[in-house]
Image 1 (cartoon, rainbow, N blue to C red):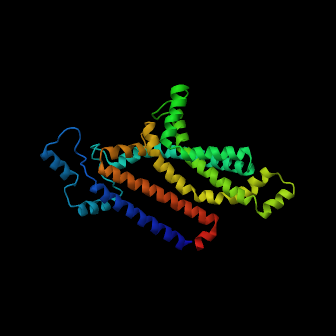
Image 2: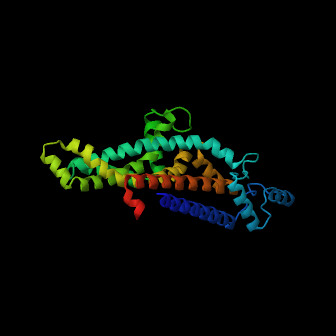
Image 3: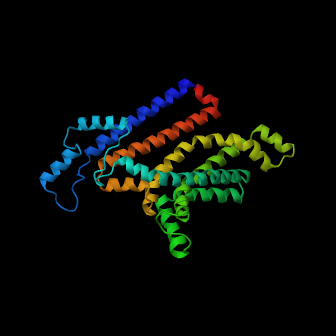
Length: 305
């Protein structure tokens, strides 16, 4: 078990270093300047700002300094929002993005499992076709399109929910639906395919032959074995929720990390882009590590492969 954990932790650290290095050099290779806006800036001020933020130093010196600061937990100052650091933006936006992501997980996992189980129990019937058609729509429609449709229907037409911003629980309903649609559809399809396979096993046939209702057999015996691949999929689900929140937060004017990421890209805020990329990458890799650990506990064969 220790060897398995050490291997996964080493892969996590190497992957994170590759992300930091690649993002740093690619970001500095892009043409443009964060200090150039709508108005021309005198050359003296440009040199002063570049010296203040260390952008006039050789690239390898900037890279070394950033790695040292990163090891100390310092993600650097924001260039566009002067006087504030990237750490402060993460501290402000993380609770909002975490709440939105947690609500999306709480919706997508049970809804996807129930929809997939229902479809498997009604295999080759209209219920199965309806559930799979619904999941196909969830997979096909992008989150930003779904967000706009939800705003049009429930806000503009029906006036039931607020169109944007962040405050009460009502503000979280539509963003949660938009963010959870894709993972719900994938989990439903994955659960359905595994449930269909498990329901063909001999021990399931034996239980049904004894007169046990299909609903009880599915919940007590089949679902337990069918959920292992679903647990393995929780890592990609976390990835979708992290990356999909960018557009959802932007459309609904939610002051989370995703919205700040888009603002930093538009403003060429190099420290903000790099800091948020590192944070998102670390969060994603840690979630994948936790999923691998959980999966290895539930299926010990993984540790010996």
